[in-house]
Image (tube, rainbow, N blue to C red; front, side, top):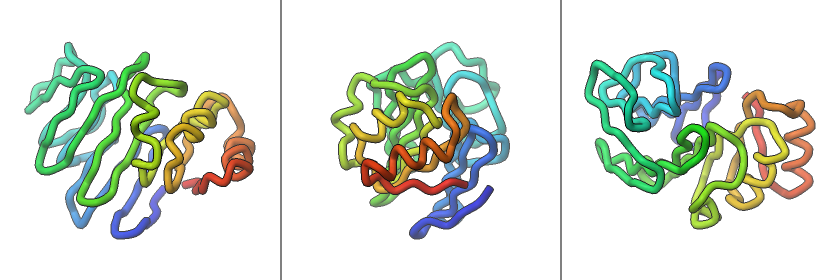
Length: 165
């Protein structure tokens, strides 16, 4: 599923996403070729550079990232947040994105308040609380424990913009 947002193209396949900025592609567990592939735990797709948790076996250029660490790859600033799987905040140009691989409160999440343009969140009660803390410009939900329409309604009741892809 594809949509345009500001100067970016966003693509979704299940719970994986692609952010395309004028041909520069950042994948979030994306099943396809990208410039930077952010991994939550399992290797998916292909990329020029992979970023993920330590111990992932990738036969390519791999940058291990621990929760709380920040790296700059091709001028994309990437920060890992803790959880059962890594979640990511990253910025491309003047826009920032947040991908939560597991819903719920994470250490350092409150420091991202009003610093996220687009948040990719699973449809769950914990993700509603995550969105309330983040106050992102836009939430793009993916399948979770809640019905997507109920999740959207919960966010809209809190004046959080949501777009289903």
